[in-house]
Length: 120
Image (cartoon, rainbow, N blue to C red; front, side):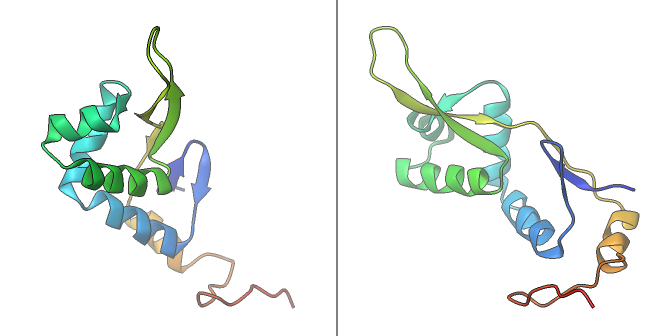
């Protein structure tokens, strides 16, 4: 069976798949992932490289971080103060018709958002 996998964790909820796809549907975020693939970068460097304002670049990075596609870490270079840099996290994305079918035809019943699963 095929799943969307973040760092070894299986994501099998429809809402999580939709949220991830929305994050990846933005070409600027995709370009950021491509840039970070080359190595970790400070938000200022990334903003300058992509010709974005600092607040907009930070907004995009935070959405990538919430989706667990990138992470921020403290980086201290010799003679400089600590700076937070962003780096890409290992992930694999593979969506097939079988995967989509499994979202809707899993043995665990789906519940509406906000409802709790109850075992009978």
